[in-house]
Length: 188
Image (cartoon, rainbow, N blue to C red; front, top):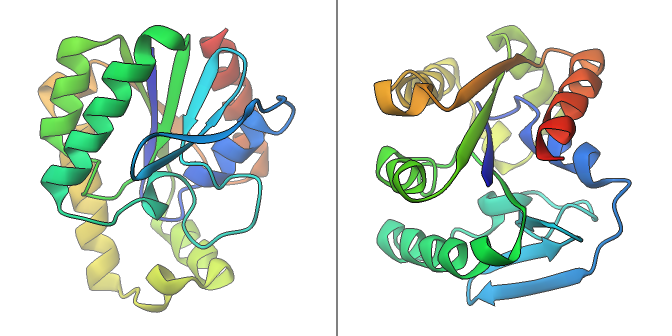
């Protein structure tokens, strides 16, 4: 199954993945396709291989070199190649380069697919951005944040996609711990 963790920037997507995999033994990092890093576990492939060290853009956010078409083609190649080899493939990003209706429709039409949407209050997103303070956060304005929130909302409220979504409140670490259990149990 392809499992996608979605949410606005600073919703806690990368933290969620880090917490899901923290107690798993990695079989190592590799690149099944040229530009996308992955970390392999027993029956789990995590797309984006930077969760074990502190980086600015873990997950698919760190693998955005090239055009949207090239990135989507590489992602599709990775899923086609790795889907039969893994019980679950875990992805997280809100980047429009990957988080778009065309790619999500393709996943829904061709594979078992589930999305966990981390819903977080804008005030909390703003607070987290100040603490995180990466390149995206330094460019953050209310206008840009609202634009991103509207984009994410347009994806998660899409009639075809919404059937595959479980919404999870993710405002604090207690929510995060509860959500890690929900997602981990779902993957078993």
